[in-house]
Every structure is written in structure tokens, then in C-alpha cells.
Image 1 (cartoon, helix red, strand yellow):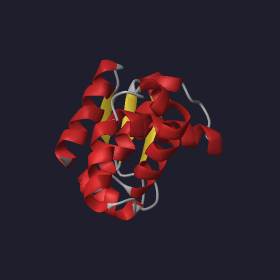
Image 2: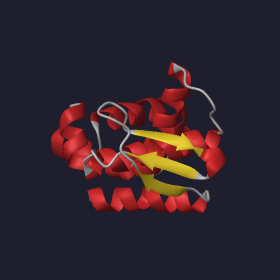
Image 3: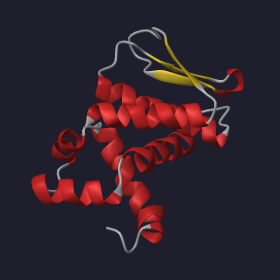
Image 4: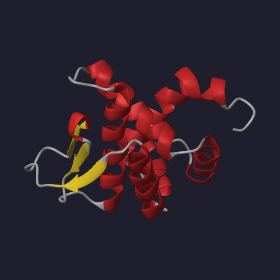
Length: 135
């Protein structure tokens, strides 16, 4: 399941004409968006799960044309990533299997806890309005 999520993020990156570049960004940085250069940089230090979620997050920055970082901008990029990587039916199925704990859901879905939390915010604000009859 994890590999599929990375492929989803990479395919969406390509759709937006962004190249994925693997570059060591140091011990703390996971990725960065260089959308003006047509690149999303991902740290090779990440696990495949972390890389998939980070790539989707950075693609969110590119989709919105973000030139700066604020808490609101970061939340929006994480929610974009969550809506890209996790379908409502997948989340519902995972919650039926493991319950509502974010850590258990992250393991079941093959994403990070941060992405699960972002998915919940996205669902409350936008997702349920878009998918009211699918969940």
C-alpha cells in the first residue's frame, strides 16, 4: 500500500510538471518545493512512507504557488496531501479495522500520523461536502 501512495504523489507531481529530486537536506528537513524551478526536493533519509507523504505535501505547496511558510500555509499543504493520498472509503475502512487512534490508522493506511490528522481536518472542512455519498 505504501508504494502505491508514493506512486500517486509522484504521478501527481509529473502532472504538475514537477521533477522529483532526491537531495540530502540535513537531519531535520524532509523536503522543499522549488516550484519556480519545476522541482520538489525530497530527502533520501526518509522512509518510503515519509517520502510519499512529504512529496504530496510539497506538491501541495506547488499547486498553491506557495512562496512562504506560515502555520496556515503548512496546514493547507498537509490537507492537500491527505486528500490526494487517502480516499474517504479507505479511511472509513481503516477506522473500522483499527479504530480511531491516529497511530493505528497511520500504520493501517501506510501514511504518517501527521497526514492522518491533516486528513481529518480536510474531511471536516471540505471532504465530506465533496464526498457526502461515498463515505
